[in-house]
Image (cartoon, rainbow, N blue to C red; front, side, top):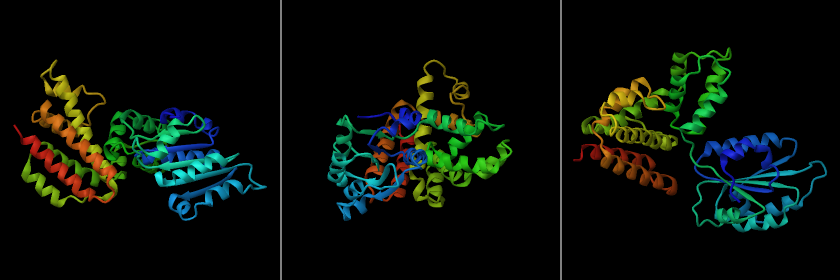
Length: 332
């Protein structure tokens, strides 16, 4: 049976009623939150953690742990990481032998044909929680909830955090931890936050992204050579590009009712960061509906390759995408 992730987050205690749950998807930050909170509410029980490879090396290990009852622990909580379909038969056997134990399985993106995913989706006894990428609304809720007791929290600050993290929950949580530890008096200073967050890498890539969407080939090529692409930031780079293209798409749709681009940009929701307004206005003059649809197709194809092919050079994939967007910006 499928449970929506936002429902599971609101009713975390209810997950303890389930004997086996599969968490899968590309949202590593959300899965990390589920894991941390499940360990917190089960801290009085015996907690075991395994990687899939450990269970594949000894296929009796999981069943042995289930059958090995402890006189001291009321229940045994088992976490399994990096799961794929290779663990399906072990999981199926465990589901037939489980008693008071609880098993929480964590996997990356699983396609619809996945045996593991299908087993949990069709099961009436066990559940699966898809962990898809957060959107701007969910990220804003996380920020406002964690900083609700802090003075100085405003829309501009929230947008700054989002701009710097690219809707990556993991990064959002890391940046919020920085802010919380820095402002122990619960009074946030916007300019100090700018210095505190890792703005440099973000600024470098945003400059490259803007030049590409402006169709400036010379500056794009120069910045491609100068910009350092950090491996762990590939999803952030893709999300940053997608956010801007979606904003251009939003503007394009509103042009039918109002051809004053400056007015459209000023009234967009959520509000555009003031530094980005001139860039967005300039780009909106360059991009039309046809180009935007081409760009969205390119980013979708890049995302599929990024998440499904572990052997691909992901930095080269992002660079190829940027070159392609620059060419599309200049197309007729």
